[in-house]
Image (cartoon, rainbow, N blue to C red):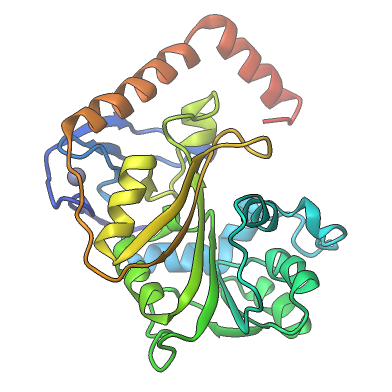
Length: 300
Ligand SMILES: [Zn+2]
């Protein structure tokens, strides 16, 4: 059985929250709340660290990566969103010596990036035992199975590129992991983060968008605040593009000086409206029918 813990807002420490929903994907119950002071979305009470770690080690792949063992697609690195977004913004590092992907899965991103930077050494942090086997087979060094471990010790300034692709929203303590990342980035290194954009969610919030594995629900305000708390500065922050309209991505660097957080209840009101409108829309008979049909056809 899962054990639960209550948490406060990871940005402003407030416990003043608004309850959004108790329903998540795969019918796994959740407690999604929004901080009334800063608008950060998060689960509370949520599973404790042991419950999550067991889930990620043993069950996560069967829910979310059913085709893991099949060939991973590295056919065309130009199709890789990370590379395209760096190139488009003209900020790709020139010759990165060490690249770290946290929550790498089987290594698709790293193998794509290797085609552009064949001399870079590749590193991964990944809890799934099956994924780890794939990584090792592809000469990617698995430095830890847990982003919360002391993987950063002795790695100060080591990495010229760190990737967090749809990973930050899974952490139990995002700011703490970002501080480790900040310390292990080189002075001219880049951090790439992509998360679901909660100001532009897809339909079917309670059967698709809200998930027990998503402990945090970021938007452009809360992602920026979370970066700032960890000494990281976004040089690019973009809400969606032609590759994915529901994604929020950022390219960040170490900051020379501490950065302020901007706490505003207007950010809460904006996020609340998006979720309330979305939930109302999902409950309309025609949308329910569509959702049920797609479910029956196995397309949801
Ligand atoms: Zn808050």
